[in-house]
Length: 71
Image (tube, rainbow, N blue to C red; front, side, top):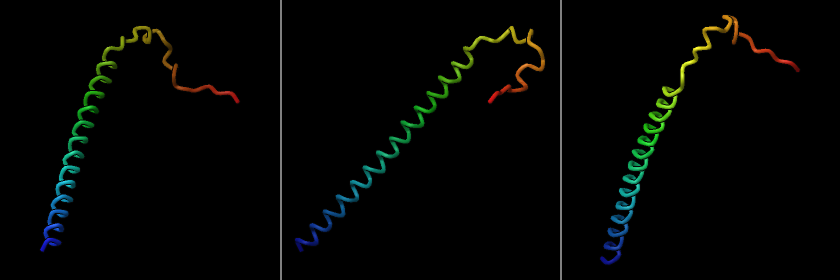
């Protein structure tokens, strides 16, 4: 009878650890998603903060179409 009680306690302990592990994984994923959201917001803000290039209107139309390389 004592052996059965120890088995029940061991099973309950494992179940509790698995539950806590699952909860920790959910918390970790939530934190990761929030960090990614913040990073994307910051990246968008940086892109929007870039000044426009008014000098681009004075450049020739063919500029940037070819890449010159030498070996």
